[in-house]
Image 1 (cartoon, rainbow, N blue to C red):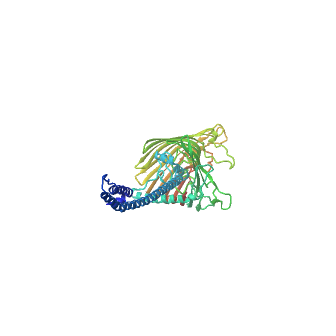
Image 2: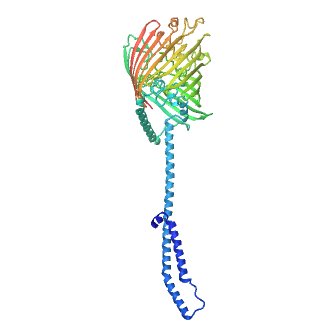
Image 3: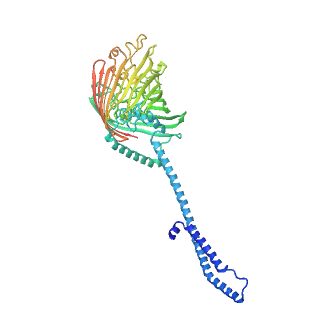
Length: 586
């Protein structure tokens, strides 16, 4: 019992023993030398008392010595315990210091990890925008840069989905959810590991302190054409075969590859600011030997954004926000698929405002409005000086607006939208043409595996927007004659796509599009279209493709396209196009 108490409370036990021994010593001293001597005694008694005192003192001396020895031993033990307590305190302080250092290192590592994650994702306000039904900046960039990729973003009014799931893209079935999630987690882990390993390497830096990101896509495509087309590697229209030409062709191209820069700036008046600019190599060819493989760099889009929680202001050169969709295709990125076959498209200088009104977590309403440069589809007269187009000569911009309702059906985006455009054109000698277009777009999930995407328009003088097969006006007489009217060419067109996506990595797309200018007007014209040898009354395009995405940044595609073009004269032309593509997104 004493040993147990000593082990648990050594200092208290020793102190108690010390008090006990001191009390025993005092009592022993009182018993041995404190007995009173009588005042009246004989010599014999005195002698006896002295002898007794001497005997008592002799008996008490060994006990006092034992007590002193015990005290010295206890004192030594107390000193030893004091030293041990001091050592324990020092070790405890050292442990606390090590804990604080480990905590600091963990905080630094966590901060570096957050920096890496922030460098690989959009700013924090992007997440809030996505939660409110607004696509993230990265998703918007993918939509502008790669309008045909399976990862294209949802239209500006549609809720964004993570990764490369975009407009008209079906989610994977439930049976594939676990494997898909595990695969994405493995990719994310590898991506973060690579990012951490790159921290010691040099980075892309801007002249300012704000974060700059380099992105793009390397796209290699092989194509085989049967029949003649307007553009060998990016065909849109079937043409007549020249007597000296063969009825087929084969080739390869890398000029649809793209490079982009994005910068994320400070908050201004409560708005998150960002900017981007993107280029490809489809701007023409070098006048050199084998120049067809030396595509010239071309400006595609460039925007400056101010994003509040529910409102955005965008200024720059961008795609048509009132016609936001495009069919899914990797074979044609230089221009969107179904261009000049019912799909309106243009990269137009513009300033627009977007406002989102969330009704619930799954439903929102979007209003977009802006002014645009009034295009009329003109070809520049020179390569060095900019002359005004027929639309710009009207001295006023084009005006556009779009409204859309977004809703999530079983976790998948459903969007229906309608838009309008007006732009005046001045065709000399006091002749004005009012160009306009009405648009409608739909993204409809059909169960878990299918998605229907479509877009239609009806307009007049919309060659600058990719309508009318690039034909803008009708001139029924000599153009220089003041009495000859200039009439806007009416046209109608659209396209529809059905997507089948059984897994997150594989999809099949089928689409049909048609652009149909009014043939009755075209028969009156004496004004030659800028691109074609004869007026075109209709252009149809059918495509089917298979897209496999083994990793989030790598895609393989096989695509077949059928083109059928009708001239006003009644002559028709057909072409069959097969394309094999490999793309690496960075």
